[in-house]
Amino acid sequence: MAAELEQAARRILDRLVSFPTVSRDTNLPLIDWVEDYLADLGVASHRVWNADRTKACLYASVGPDVAGGVVLSGHTDVVPVDGQDWSSDPWTVTERDGRLYGRGTCDMKGFVALALAAVPLAQGSGVRRPLQIALSYDEEVGCTGCIGMVEEMAARLPRAAAVIVGEPSRMKVVTGHKGGGGFHVHVRGFEVHSSIMNQGVSAIMEAARLIGWANDRNAENAAKAPGPLARAFDPPWTTVHVGKIAGGTAHNITAGDCRMGVDFRVVSGEDVEAWLAAFEAEASRLDAGVKVVRPEAGVDLRRFFTVPALVPETDGAAEALARRLTGDNATHVVSYGTEAGHFQKNGYSCVVCGPGDIAQAHQRDEYIELSEFRAGAAFMENIVAELCK
Image (tube, rainbow, N blue to C red; front, side, top):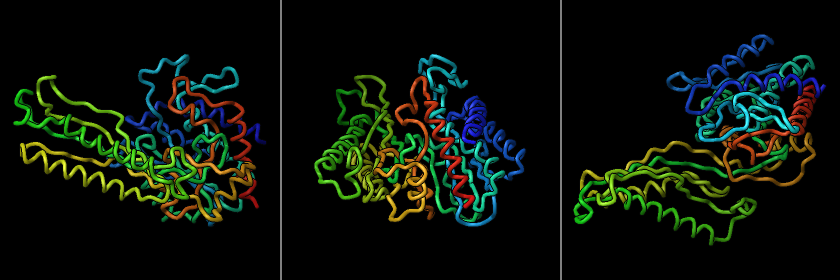
């Protein structure tokens, strides 16, 4: 049976990868296809739209309308292939050397294909508790697209006993991840000749103060003894990061503008909102200082994502289920964020567990090992068997 599910999932994966659902673009052609696929099986699905209706989440429930089911959660968006020198077409699944190459095969259309292939198996097996499918958009830009879908599922569907977020973990059971948040920062300066820089405001040099604040926090956090929930992470402290910065006109003009992104990866046991508020307070102090020199100057912040941490649960139903089905009893946490944090925030028991290796995510020639894909198929078959009990 697992072999049949794998073959069906392989065909579905071909279709999913053919949709170039980069986060900056629409995912609606893929959602249309999934909606039609489910409708052909007699399964009703529901969309949760973004504000301008250019993207949508989709969720569905297969089986009786009762509590105690399992949610299989995946995102439909992928990262760009721009500037990556692929050996084959990134939008076509290419099999070679025991691997399936293509954008999203690992992160995470492989899991989504397996979840969709499990739907007819659940129908034919007579599940006594529902299999629920949850597909989101904009995970890759801050796990923002799933929020309305998770809230709607919690309000409209019988509560599932477990949520499996199928990010690539090599089928290891991940019970915790860092929380996070980020800002788009715009520092507005005032241009003058650099020989009289005291009469202007350099947006770049002022932005450097915020980067210095980030460096100071990183040094302080690294020097602290990690708390009990933080010890398992690598690194076992909260990090503040600036990955991109742009601004300025010429070397002899104080910069009129500087833009950068600042993001936080917050260990369990610390408050994401408290860290974001601390940065907002620092930016506010900087804003007040530059306005003393030039009232036109200032600092503008726009928060673009907040991801709750996934906190290890005591006697969690999702953890118990995933460990039973995979045989993995080790402790695993990760420093990146996932949509599991939003599910847990809405009262669901959650783990991260899926086929593939996160090291392949976002890479040139992204791939999933066929052995991992096969293990994912067996996992889906086991989940359906559990729902029949």
